[in-house]
Image 1 (cartoon, helix red, strand yellow):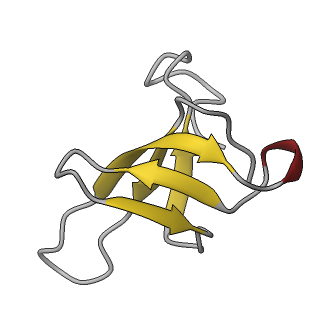
Image 2: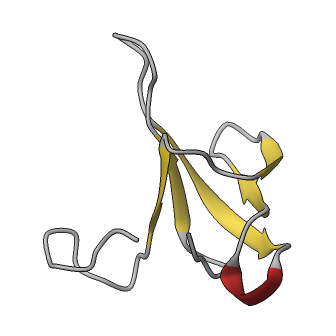
Length: 71
C-alpha cells in the first residue's frame, strides 16, 4: 500500500450496518509512501494507522470510475 498526503484512506465496515469511514491522509510516516499514516477524519478524530486488509487508499486526482482509482 502506497499513499501521499491528500489521499483518502477508506476503512470498510466490518459488520452488517457499519458504514465505511473515510479520512484524509495528512502525513505519511513510513518510507516511500508506506504506512503508518496520520489520518484526519471529518468528525475531528485523528489517528495514526497502519491499515489492514479492510482499508484501501483512494487517490483524489483520479476519476472515481476509471481504472487505477484504487491502490
